[in-house]
Image (cartoon, rainbow, N blue to C red):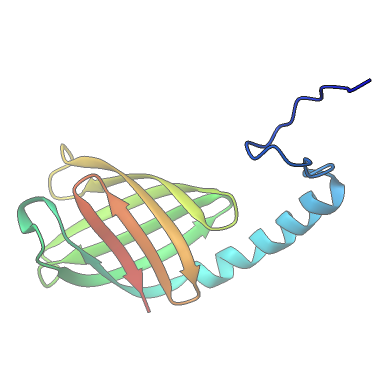
Length: 134
């Protein structure tokens, strides 16, 4: 007699037993604890898209983590304009949130970022890229 067991994974192979057990949660908490230390500090920023199309605009940025919240205050056009990103850490390396143009607060766009390593965060907004590098 065959028993038909529904699988959680989409590949039709054995499921991972207890993927979110105490050991996994403790490891995730420990790994996440590293993120704030990696993020804090002075960075450079670059973005493209929108009216700029493929042209990269470059500037400076200050990045901070407060709990699960990521903040990036950045400028461009030699500091004449600035923007702010507020995002939430989703998993160990994904940031999900929104950007606002501080010179014109009507301009707001979704933003998502990936913490690649200690020196790079790759980001996307609805019309292009918005990245941070050390």
